[in-house]
Image (spheres, rainbow, N blue to C red):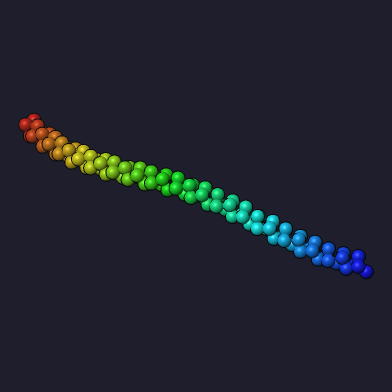
Length: 102
């Protein structure tokens, strides 16, 4: 009977010890998972920073393209005005020449 009681005590303590080891191992797994999540967050923040830098470069390039496009439009307008004046002058000269030839 005494052996039977000793076995019950042993089983109780064994279960208790196993439960404690299980809780500690769960705690270690939790810490490891948290560590991995922190590493992932650092990498994610780094990637986000790189993406934002590239977006800023694209915005800057877009702004430069718009600026150059505005310059081209102004030059185009000047060319059209000059062309119109030249057409007007040449038409006047043609009309004068036609009058002289008649």
